[in-house]
Each structure stands twice: as C-alpha cells, then as structure tokens.
View 1 (cartoon, rainbow, N blue to C red):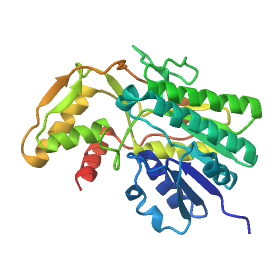
View 2: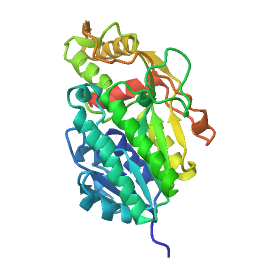
View 3: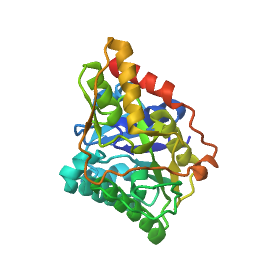
View 4: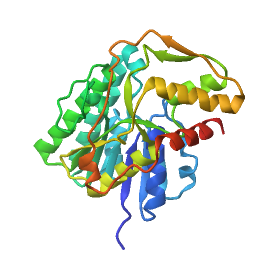
Length: 316
C-alpha cells in the first residue's frame, strides 16, 4: 500500500493558511498535512482548532528561516506550500527588515531544503498582486513588470524571483500564485475589513486613508484556497498564476458597506474619518486571471454575501 501523500503548509496557522489546511484535510482523505508556523501575532492555534483533532494533521512550531527545523520537514513532504509571510503594509513601512527576513530569506531557506530533498512534487509560493505595483488602467498579466512600491511588496517580489531562479537553475517543480486582497473568517484584526468592522461595531470612527478612492480586487478566502488546491494538482511548474475575482471596489465603498452592516447590528452608525494617506499607497490593483481560469477554477462567492458572512463570523 503506497504511503499517504504529505503536504507541508508553512504559515498554516495564519489566515489563508489555516483555511487551506482545513481544505486539504477535508477534500483529500488520504493526505497527511503538516503545519509549520512560528505563531507570531498573526498566527494562532485557535485558527487550527478543527485540524488539531485530526490524526492526519501534525503541527510544528518553528521559523521558516531556521534550517534545522525546515530541512527534515521539507524532506518528508511531497508538496510544499509557502504561506509564511509578514503581510501588513503598515508594519512593513515601520520595519522593512523583518519582512525581508521572513518573506525573502525564509523562502530561500525553504527552496534550498526543497532542492536538497530532491523528491518534492510541487513547491507552491503564495505571493501577492502588490508585486506589480499600481495600474492606472487595465489588468496585470503574469508577465507584467514587477514594480513593488512598499517593503512588503518588494520582499514578496524578491521571493518570487528566487523561486523562478530555482526553477530555471535546478529544474525544480515550483509554481507561484499571486492573489488579490483576500477576506473572510479568522483574518487578523489589523486588516481592513475586520479592523473597520470592529471599530464600527464599537461606535468608533472608521479611519480611511486619503480620499478612499484606492481600488482593490476582493477575493474570498474559500475561493483563494480552492485556487491553491487546483494549482497543486494542475499547475505547470515554472509558471505564475494570478488569482483574482475581477470584483474591484474603492476602499470608500467597502468602508461604507461595513458601517452599514455594523449599524444594522448595533442600531447606530459609526462615523467615517478620512485620515492622512500612508506613504507609497498604491492607487489601483487589478489582475488578469485567465491563465488560472483555464485550469477550471472560478470564484464562487460574490462580495456582498461573502462580506455579510464574514461579518457574522467576526462577531460570533
């Protein structure tokens, strides 16, 4: 009887990572899933509450920059998914070095372990649409130039380039996904949707950077994880795949929707406060996801019902 397939999910106690761990365990009953997570402020065992009770799941607390931890875990994995990252742009503005260490150096440690193991079927690097920088119009295809304008985006762009270099040099089965703004249950409260909602529920002002006309493309976490799952099965090594919904909204519109949702819940409407814009705040992101859709993936959760369900989960 063949040994079960093993998935190593780095950053699996975080927002997107924990949803992916659950999906792999649920949809692949033969699979073993190992979660590696440092458990910084953004990762929590509470996110893995259901997975921790599964005999096919193992949790390892550790840093992707620590070779002693990473090497044996990668050596025992058939599939490696790297979701371990510092991701909050505001924090990156204050401390870019931490982002370079985790997002770029940590990816290098994982890649070198994957190369040394010589047995992995897929290495999936989970990146971001922010590496393309702002687009005044149109959509960024996967071959668009990289123009990151904040330390977070730059650290992820560096990791992407390392992945492409390891594929080209060592012919390793490495893929890259570049997802748009993802939302859903268990997202850390520093992010826009949970941060705005929690303030609105408390009757506090909702702080919106600048004029609020920055445009982002919103993707529910379940749709994002379905895309990653599809790439693990059908993605072409050496290829980049944009993961986007095509649903683009101004931040101002999203803030107003959250205020209205909270008002229906608590019976009062929180004020909207425009605050000074952050440095290097990109105006508009938009990606072309046709390459991924050709593999049979489609986003299934529309923004309004997805936002309502997310808010229900946040105050549950």
